[in-house]
Amino acid sequence: MTIEDVQNEIIDEFAMFEDWEERYQYMIDLGKDLPLIDEKYKTEDNIIKGCQSKVWVHANMVDNKVNFTADSDAIITKGIIAILIRAFSNQHPEAIINANTDFIDKIGLKEHLSPTRANGLVSMIKQLKLYAIAYQTQLN
Amino acid sequence: MIDVQHIRKDFPILNRIVNGKPLIYFDNAATSQTPQQVIDVIVDYYSNYNANIHRGVHSLSQEATDAYEQARIKIQKHFNAKHPHEIIYTSGTTDSINLVANGFSSLLKKDDEIIVSALEHHSNIVPWQMLCERTGASLKVIPMNEEGELILSDFDALLNDHTKLVFVNHISNALGTINSIEYIIDEAHKVGAAVLVDGAQSCPHIKPDVQALDVDFYVCSAHKLCGPTGVGMLYGKEDWLNKLPPYQGGGEMIAEVSFEKTTYAALPHKFEAGTPNICGGIAFGAAIDYMNSIGFDNIAKYEHELLEYATEQLQKIEGLKIYGTAKEKTSVISFNVGNIHPYDIGTILDKMGIAVRTGHHCAQPIMDFYNIPGTVRASFMFYNTKKEIDTFIVALKKAVMMLS
Image (cartoon, rainbow over all chains, first blue to last red; front, side, top):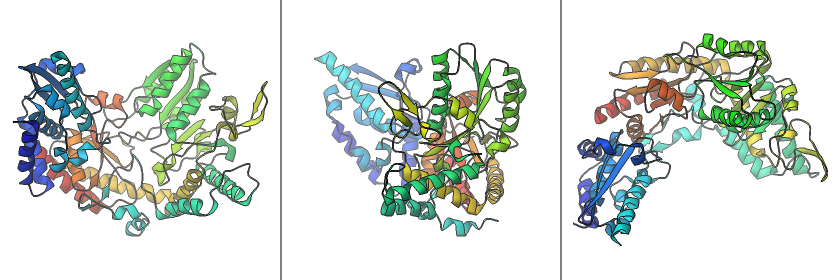
């Protein structure tokens, strides 16, 4: 599946919810199910700055596809990361670099894209793309 | 007595609907809301007499100058300073602190010591660290106990002939503790040290008398007491303000300028370089009028009721822990529920129209003391109600249920 396919799948899932409560409950549940980052990668270097909650992200590349694992000490933030990782993982670095993130708006989480939001969703997306850029450089 | 329903009509923002729910604003320790009376003053200034002040010969300039200087006198009277020129307009508490820190950099030498409290906001730690780096003086810290109170016997032990400055907040922004500043000022003066009290959190709740306190410097921001952002004040005893060198160079702050030598203007202009926040200063005065029209005794009594009521209700929630349980505290409650991250609680409360603050409240040393990433902080003003607290408690329980 392309990033766009996955994003559309996520949009369809969120379209089923009637109100914010259901949306947030789903995100919280996604957060609880997030495949945890290996403890050894929960280092200071892997913390994304600019978040009120702590967020760790680790990336690796297998067969020219980038995979992400992550964790956070706040559950809603974990839910957001879970959504992002689902959209961006197991993709070619170039696809990640070029992906847009409009789907966040479409699933009713636009408020988390505001630069004042302390969860740092914007920093998170930037970090995932930076990893992709780094891996793309290796491929060139 | 406070007629809260009547008072609420003064605040247009309290009619806001946020995320489909009537706004409940419990982030007052970060900034207070603005009454129509102050908004009117701001609109009137820009509609009718906006002009640059002090040197204009035309009527508008004189009107603006009069209003700005009248506001200074209001502030002087409110804090009971001896002279209007002991009130320096600044851009806010942080600016005021930096002004004093900068001034002291030419007065301190290597073995001198500065004392700050463990309860300080970052704005009251960082400038002194920078000052110590510049001068070689050292920074000592008054520790706190589990309740969030300063340990005064440890403060006594820190004082000595090398102590030149003591900096303490009147009320802690993170925990709401009211510090024993009278004691701290008296003891510091016994060793000849100057005392700066950060009144950012106290000025909306307490009317300090700077002469009775005998405090050397007292600072606050207008936006914490129903005024606009971007303006605040530094009170300094005349002698101290004369001793400190100017902070910034520019217009307004000079008496005469030649390429050989510049002589500085007298107080307060020596510290007010450039065109100031004229409208802000005037509105600051209007905010003080507004607060006094309600009365600080009424405010303190009513807010204490809100604090006791909210504390009682919160304590009924399983797993909820309140940080900062000082005997003397203001209407600020910092708490966590179980292991739930404060950010998560704040996010869910926001969806229900409730504004609280989450995080370390610019007081990381306090969070380190309790070994927590942060807290949820609800802070009340005289326009909040018990009914809002009830709604907040229901919403909080719902958030906890969703997040557990």
